[in-house]
Image 1 (tube, rainbow, N blue to C red):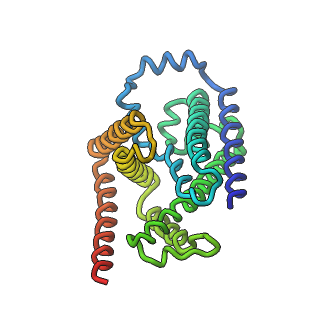
Image 2: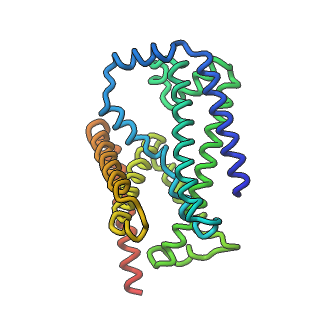
Image 3: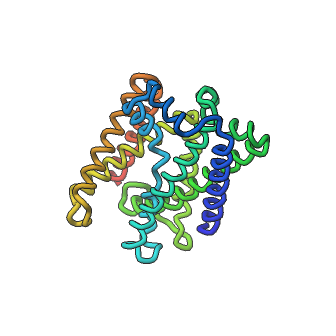
Length: 284
């Protein structure tokens, strides 16, 4: 599975970076001119922070490597190294891809096409091959993300089940693999996909990741001496995550309150299920 994941990741990076370079070479504007136009627009730091909160899910997943701590060599060295390198690489890829798209695709087209803007821009330059390459890159990106999430989070689910907070059958492993936990996660993810559109799922994921990361940062703050964490970085992480959470909730409340109700409904269902399960477990 690790080798398949490597193939998917390297292939999608090659495709996305290649498309980015093609877009830059066919840009309709120069970088200085683009920066001047952006400076004269109505864009402000607040709107940038709101968008960063909405798309926070794009910078999540790095912590999943921690769930495989018992299955890697020298975790005390490899975990920090892998997380920091992954963050730097992802920032670079996103920056180059976004820069190429903005330079080659008119902003009106980006707004109109929304999540299909990159495919539409590649189609204008490379024809149907451009669209198909973007689709292939998106499929590989999604597949590798699902694979990584199932690998890391399924082990976390099995660990939580071993503590008694999930059904005990999720603990069972086959050749060290929590098969039932993987299947359960896949079924739950499929149900979530059927429950709402892509935008709702994206925002639900961002809100959830922000809340969970904020709680984890606070937990680490309480025991930062035992974890040998930097107090400054821990406090900065909590402040940034809290700000992101408030911004995304503000955006949802002021622009599309129905999506906030949908997200709140999912949390209510999950909380009720957890309460009922814990109550039933205590009675047993």
